[in-house]
Length: 116
Length: 115
Image 1 (tube, rainbow over the protein chains, first blue to last red):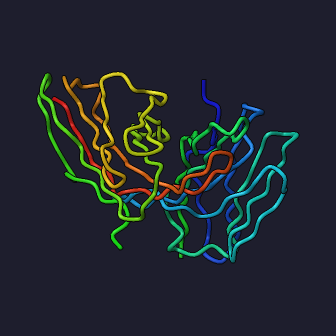
Image 2 (image 1 turned 90 degrees about the vertical axis):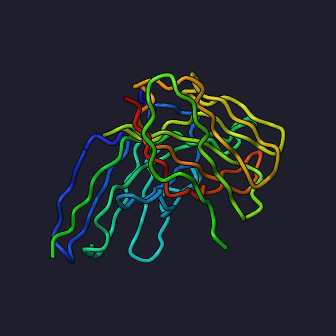
């Protein structure tokens, strides 16, 4: 049972254009969402997050949008740069009851390639 | 400040052998986690710990054991290696928060092959 899904295995974008990565979730108890970026042979690194009380969070070139009714979130990268080429993971957690201990459920990842 | 370090980087095991994957963090984080990542899949939680002496199972704990004797170290033990345990293993840590999620900091991973 895949509770967090990234249905696009890969995305190819031209430098300077917008990259949009999508993520869907099924567990309505999830209330905090994170995006991680991973380069080959390295561990994932935190990129940006959003709480379910918000519908948008922005950090420089990165913006995450949350649509709770659709159980959907997206990561926008504008403008895209060749150094953004990596695997992007969506992750979710539930803080309900105060016993989540920060445990994350990850999607399968989307490989982003930004062409010069 | 090295963050989260993992050893070894690579290892090949024969079926039935045992090994311990080491993980150390120097950020004084209470929470630590072990994940595995199979090809084309996301990370799956194996075990986690909320402090020294306290551990619990994650989504895929079978075939693994952990211990947490200090805040810094969280080793993962494979007792009888099986080909299904061929994967990349990541250790992570984060600040404690009962009702708040904080971002996790990941180590570089250990690539394990069982043949």
